[in-house]
Structure formats: structure tokens, C-alpha cells
Figure 1 (tube, one colour):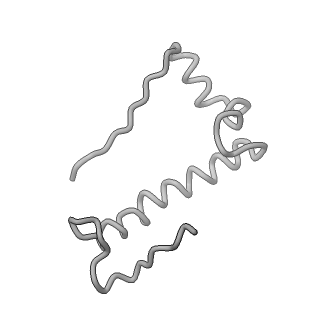
Figure 2 (cartoon, helix red, strand yellow; figure 1 turned 90 degrees about the vertical axis):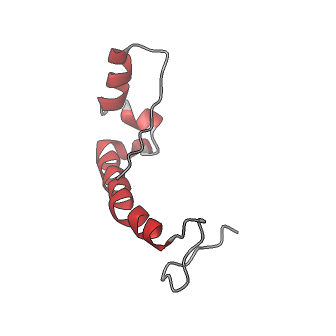
Length: 81
């Protein structure tokens, strides 16, 4: 199985970045959790993990190597418009 890593470099000290990532008072300031705080961050984290553990593998199983859904797939793309 292959692995994908997303790496981002920030021009700040590791201590500052770690605090921004872990301080419950700061997390809502840079995430889409808004005033929901740590509870919303935990909920969204659960949803993202499920998407990566369940949703993405299901889609990958139904995609051909050309990136098109295989005939007979039960997945139906939604229109963005």
C-alpha cells in the first residue's frame, strides 16, 4: 500500500506552530470550527477520519484507472450547480 503525506512548512518556530495546533483557545481562530471550539474540532476530526477510512476507499474501489466510475457503481456524482 502506498502512502501520501502532506507537508507544510511555516516560517515560525516549532513551539509557536505546536501551540496554534493544540491550544483550544486558538484552534477556532484558524479552523472552520468558529465559535464551536474544541467540541466542534473533535466532531469534524471524527468526520474527516471517517471520510478517509470509509468514504475515500469506497470511491477508489469504484474508480477505474482512468478516474471514471466503473459501470455498475452504486456511487452517483452530484452536480455542483
